[in-house]
Image (cartoon, rainbow, N blue to C red; front, side, top):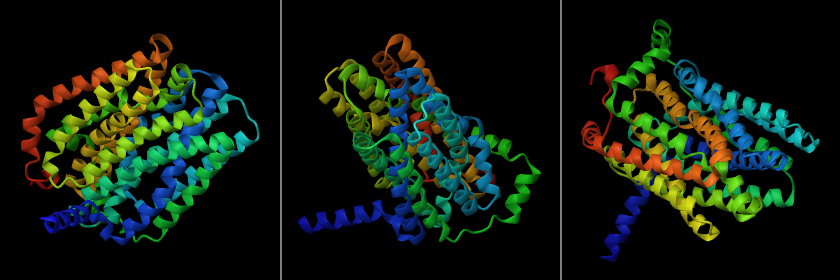
Length: 428
């Protein structure tokens, strides 16, 4: 019996990490692991800097809005770039530009610039670059993992990496902020991009085929993507769910500095531990998805994740005990990431390659693009009704969304019962 359990555990581990069979994916994963931590260090440091200079929840929301709002405006259009041009070159240019903006941000901070308008401008520049980099990076996974059956696992492992950064990055940022300054954090992020750029540079990337370019030029590529998404029941149903989770659930990160200051009287380390606790839940969610053997069951994961997110947010909002709030944060992180990543896995696995960039662009718009609107709205709401009431409202909306999605679950499961999304473009 013990031998059987060991064999089952080994099989489960191989299944969970099967995308690592591809050397290019392993290199990219290693580079991203450094860059993701650097990005989270910058995110926490920028939020702390803005709150230290202004003590304004509204400006916290505005900062997040400017960082992510461009994805809402041009994210779906930027997804067409990965379908029409060399993804490797696009990704290298985008990563280099992100490194440059981090250098500028670090130089401004170390020079003692206190005008908040300058930092808001840099946040907007970062958002513009990221609106192109994010969908290109997501679609680049298909280059790193050419075997289609391994692609959902690569998506889940990539989400696992993002949330590992959420776990360690904020804690490292809190320690760095207590020992040095925000400017040092920004410079560390700037140099972290070198790792992922090196991994991308040595990856062989196939050229975009002429028929894909011709098809995209002959038809309006963006409208073609919208038609595909609106005509597919799974994508049409789940993308709005991702948008709701992003708008009402994700702003907890933006409001954490205000919660720390108002309720706990904590410092940057308290902020780091709370956000890191959410990252622990995100890691648990993506680890579960990475080991999930049945793609067709993922809609059930989406429903469960929305319930987990909503209930954890409500419980967090009614407690003033720091230890209890720390315990609730993993449920929040699990809910946000598992809901979004399960939909991403479905889209990546079943979408044809010639339109994958546009579908990922729509997904990124629904998740990361809607988040700044939620952050801005949450900041304004917190100014008027309080931070905790704002979090509670978001939790209730997520629970109601789960109940509505539960009614659509039989149809969604039937649509995905063959372990893939139908390829409408090819008529299958």
